[in-house]
Amino acid sequence: MRSEYAAGARGRPSTSPPEHVAARCAAYAGGVDVAREIADWFTRSGRDLPWRRPGFTAWGTLVSEFMLQQTPVVRVIPRLEAWLERWPTPAALAAEPASEAIRAWDRLGYPRRALALHGAATAITERHGGEVPDDVDALLALPGVGPYTARAIAVFSFRQRHPVVDTNVRRVLARAIDGRAEPGPARTRVDLEAMDAFLPSDRAESVLVNAGTMELGAIVCTARSPRCDECPIAAACAWRAAGYPAHDGPRAPRQKKYEGSDRQVRGLILAELRASDTPVPADALAPTWPDAEQAARALAGLIRDGLVVGSHDDGFTLPD
Image (cartoon, rainbow, N blue to C red; front, side, top):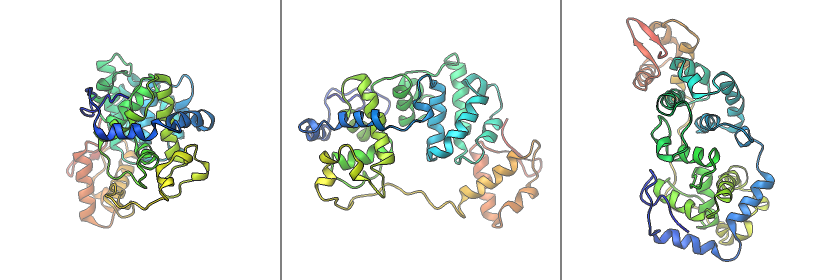
């Protein structure tokens, strides 16, 4: 099996897959065809989600991928539907100020995603005639689009053969192929190589395997409570065969607690600004949080990230 991304995250090909990829191939080449089992299971059992339905646009897929970053599906679906009703095309969003994207984002969290999504819409409109590009490198050049998002759009919207790797995919491969409880910290190039080796050569089937592996990790092979009795590849899982050994290697970084964090303060400040069409004086923002030093730090971070503009003299507002 070939490895398209061995030279790095931007897609330069390699002619000689590294040893660890070849070893992974050998691990499942005989016996159960794990990839095919996952594809068949996904065809039968995949959830009915808006971005999986026929006719869903590439722009809709891009918006959904931005929203799904660190946000549960159940929270994304209603916001996605409202967003696409208001802005059905990149040009529609690009025609409005960035402040409207931030307002519409509301409490989805990580509002820099809204700012980046507005930037991506503007870039698509200016560089690509308002059409989401199907090329991975062109997608990577858009604001806010990284290795996962670029390949997800290329695969799920344009049905191309690329490895799509998120936390769920990494967990499934770590357990089923490597026999490890956790995948450890992300390594973009290595992770892409591993998934590329796992994918079948057939393009249509590779799309199903990408989606199915992600789905399997999301709803069956979960981080804390894997439901092995429901897993379509349990018979071939190396972790299960080894007796479910505990993880003894490095762990992926864990998100810090939200309560009391700068993220919470940033959210409170943005809520005040979203509710106002005119600049908000600094003293009106002060009561949002009792720790004045932390509030000042959060405000400075918002200004640095381009989510807030203004000054203590003139007041603060969302960007135009």
